[in-house]
Image (cartoon, rainbow, N blue to C red; front, side, top):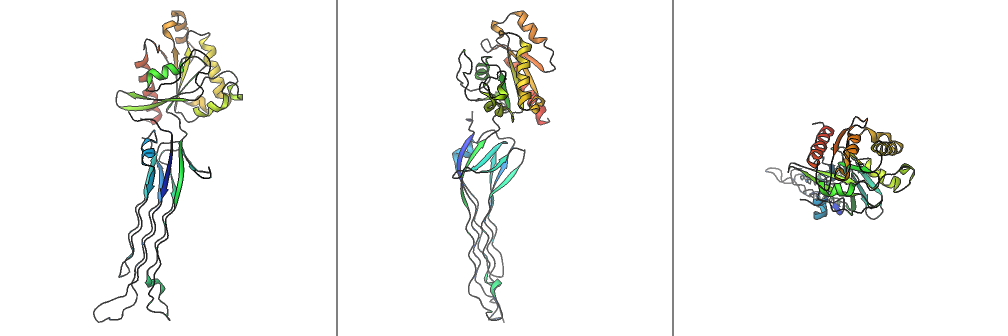
Length: 331
């Protein structure tokens, strides 16, 4: 399985322009023809483009150097050289591009099929036919092509995941992530074990890979910076589907659900418009009454009961995740 990579340092270089040419017409009966040197072709551009099928910068990190093609020189008979081929860098949605030396953000590619010109190719030089005048009808010089541009860039994937896994501290998010995906998050029975968002890739029946992020536990007041606060609420903004993890063994399921909804709404009401699944966790240590109370929550969302220990309900949860992902894709 391909490793998830959300940061890459690369160099890009646009193509240099081709040189203009010094040439004169040499045809039968025209022994002293005028200048007919053609222009050089422009160098290729470096363009970064969103590819909705990508989820990682893995291949980009391996390659590291991206070069566009140089323009070709001109030719006689006023023939222009071919333009250099553009270099297209394909990245996942949500990729931010920064100048490595200055830290300046060049572009933030959030939308499907969005693209940005990173480095324009050098302009081709003009052939000697452009420089003929009444006083110099046989110019013996032409322009060279302009050089391309080289840049050092940092690419960051801000779209942290397809699915955001949220819940109160110690609800079992990291454990669930580890059994749904290939992730190996830090797991412990105390609040805020997760100090950074953990990522994993869920392989659905070998047909699709879905990235899931375990967002550190939300507590009442998180939108004001309490607990791990706004730092991690930001990671939820660009996820497409949310899993509300409710600990069946810990207090009121309704209270947990209301706390999560309130914190997301206080940070950004738009978050509650994302499709979501209510997931009741720790079924193996919960009573039938606790499970029943969860299933009868007055909520319109789809509900799934799971146990990360016994693996109960995991296949059903995967099916539900895929259903919402395809719905978000408009399939």
